[in-house]
Amino acid sequence: MSKIYRKTYAEIHLPNIYENYTRIQKKLPTKTIIPVVKANAYGHGVLEVVRYLVDKNINYFAVSLLEEAIEIRKVFPQVNILIMGYVQREYFDVAALNNFTITIANMNQLDDIVEFDLPLKVHLKIDTGMNRLGFKMNRDIIQSFSILKEHHSIHLEGIYTHFATADGSKEEYDKQLSRFKEVLQLLNYDFEMVHISNSSSMIKYENEYDFTTHTRLGISLYGLTLDQETTFLLNTYRLISQFAEIKHLKPGEKVGYGFTYTAVENEIIGVLPIGYADGFIRQNQGGDVEIRDKRYQIIGRICMDQMFVRIDKSVTLDDQVIIFGGLISIDEVAERLHTINYEVVCQITSRVPKKYIYNEGVVL
Image 1: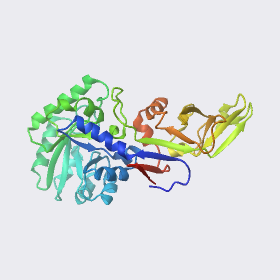
Image 2: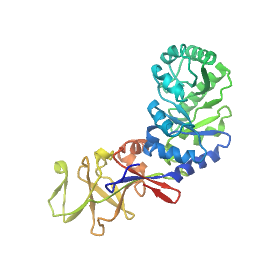
Image 3: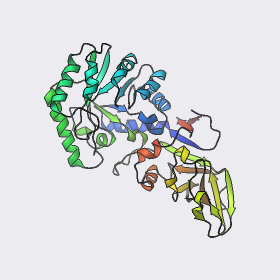
């Protein structure tokens, strides 16, 4: 957590993160939920999020990178960590010595693991149609499974896949699901962990499956979803600032780089100390921010370190400005930018410090 020297910060509500977890867990009483904390816990701050969840007796987490796993392991030596991304074969020893579980997804990894002699937990990744990571052909699946199962130091703990359209096409989703079931029948093995669902699949379909043991809770842990019908999640992230300066413009005066905004009458402009170097990118020009439950428009080009908001005489330097996470939802910002809510929170940079709501208090 960083010291806050400017009045711009992200407010992270940790109890809401856990509440989202518990609400979904109640819907899936027979499954174990694995919180996904990759990408700095989707921009929320991985160490604080993991610490809060560990205090709630959650001890299995998923990340994408070896680097992410190492960051967690330095602080939490006992938790279980699944690395879902590609771990190069020359770093298998780092994973083994840190007691990580890695994903085996291609023949390059498999070729080197034959000679590996340290204890290592692995999950087999199956490509069921997304054509990203994972074994795709039956012959490769059978070969990889046989090598991993018979290896003297490898613990073949689990098997999984990933859906491309859980929030969209049910037809394509069902094709991937059918393919994964075919693989399970082909291998005919009692895996300790079988997991297929991301957040969308988990909420919509996971209760229909009796062959899975775990699920992976990613974006919806943080109160976000791509499914409009999912409305029970709580918001966990607010981006907040406060004006550094207020200027009074005369008709015809211009604002910012390129003079893309011209005052048409006497106007008041507030300058916020946040810009695209903080991850609030220039394409947000024309959107709104929230001040005392009212919308105000972002005008002029967003600078590297500042941005402009057209305000009225009721606004003061002391007013809190909620850039998103309140009246202006994260989904609204995503729609404005023609992207998804994942990207909005993930692109806020480490230059923005975080305040954590922890129970009824605030950790600075």
